[in-house]
Length: 219
Image (cartoon, rainbow, N blue to C red; front, side, top):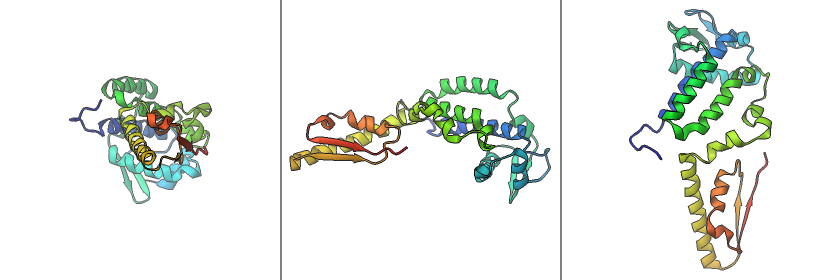
C-alpha cells in the first residue's frame, strides 16, 4: 500500500540518482571524461568513449540530466567536470549496486520491479551504448518478458490502474449487454505484456457467453 504522506516520486528519484552515478562511472571507465576543469566537446567525448552512432543523442540527453544531478557542467556543445566529480563516481560498482539494492528494497518494496529492470540495464549499459550488445536483448533476455512485464503488474501503481481500467471496461460491457441483449465484442489494441488484459479478463462479465475478447500483439 502507498504511504499517502510520502513523496510519490521518492523511489524514482533515489533510483535515478544511483543510476546516474553508475552510468557516469561507466563513461569514465570508457575514457569519456577529461580531467576536472578541462572542457571537452560533446562530439569528442562520445568519440573517446566509443559511443555507437544510434546512441549519441541518448548520451547527449543523459549528460544533460547528469549535469542537473551531479558535479558536471554542460554548456552548449561541451562538458567539463567540476570539483568533486571523482567522489561522485562509484568505487566498486557491483558491490555498491548490491548494497543499494538491499537498502532500496527495504525502503521502497513497491518499486522492486523497476529496480530489477534498471539493474539489468545498468549492468549492460557500457556494452549497449558502444554497440556491442543489443538493447532489446537486454530488456527481453532470451525472449523473456518477465523482468520488463513485472513493471505492469504486481506493483501497487500498475495494479491500481489495471484494476481501474478493468472496472471501466466491465461496466461498459454490462451496460451494452443490458441495452442490446446481443453479442459484445471487445478489442484491445496492443496487449503488450498482458498486465491490463489479465485484469480485464478477471472480471466476471467477461466470461458471459455473449462476450468475445480480442487483442492485437505484434511484437
